Amino acid sequence: MSVQAVLSGHTERVWQAAWHPTRLEIASGGGDRAVRVWRQGRDGQWACVWHEAAAHKRTVRAVAWGSTADGAVLTTAGFDGATAVWEADGDDASLACVATLEGHENEVKAVAWAAGGTLVATCARDKSVWVWESLDDGDFECVAVLHEHTQDVKGLAWHPARDDVLVSASYDDSIKVWRDRAGDWYCADTLANAHASTVWAVDFDPSGNLLASVGDDCALNVWRTDNIDDAFVPFRKVASLQNAHSRPIYSVAWSKAHGLIATAGGDNAIRIFKFDHPSNSVALVTEIINAHGDFDVNCVRWCPLQESSHLLLSCGDDANIRIWSFDSQINNIK
Image 1 (tube, helix red, strand yellow):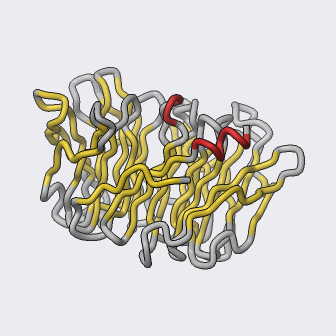
Image 2 (spheres, helix red, strand yellow; image 1 turned 30 degrees about the vertical axis):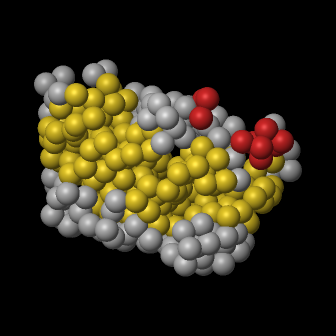
Image 3 (tube, helix red, strand yellow; image 1 turned 135 degrees about the vertical axis):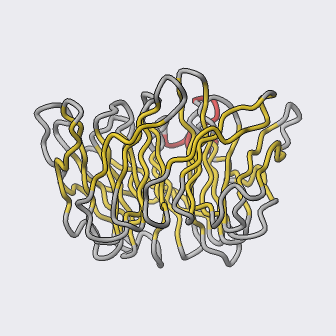
């Protein structure tokens, strides 16, 4: 494993970064209230090609790209309670805020786009999950407000192939599976006490039948459903790796290309795991100690492009984004 690039420009911790869905480009947001977009040039070097110094009134907590009929759209969510929608403005490097999604009472903690490109979900400290629909006129309409969590909602994940299955993770130690039935969103499954403490993040495997979760208890759990379709079967825990990290785990990313699981957390480490289906077990493949020096690692994300699926981004309290290459490890595992 090797560092391909270190992206510096933020002046405070970087909470989250996200890959562009169709090209080698990254968006990031952090405590400095700024949103930055980074791109790899023809010479292989990465550079910041656009930034908005005051994208939000407070910390930018989450960023996510969505693939819509009109191209890629960037959404950013902040501690100011707002979610901003950004689209290309003139040249392909500049972005303009075209919509602001408001309704949460306080800090928005996560934002995620469904695969179909018309639905986006947000969650917040106000214990709620909101589902928004992108309309033909460029506006957004709230189609559901989901209130069943009893504490701060920390993370979201859409099913990789379905726009009617959404998962949320919470400070109440639970994971909830939400489904849409004829326009009516409801809680189809609650994984109570999914972790011994806060559930920080969740992500689906490529099939959408497995779900990984990480939490304040330092554990990596894997859950399975035998039927995600209309005859839905509740998720059950099939693997649990205790002490996957030595401190709380803040982020999990399950690659849709090669199936490896990346995690990151408060012990400054990034770890890569492989889930073995026959044995329902999780094994450590490799790790990066002090990935961002002596600072927490807040987020990891695999590149969604097939030809670049060996690339992993991370961001941390050191105000940097790092891009890692895992070529040899992935080839050997395959």
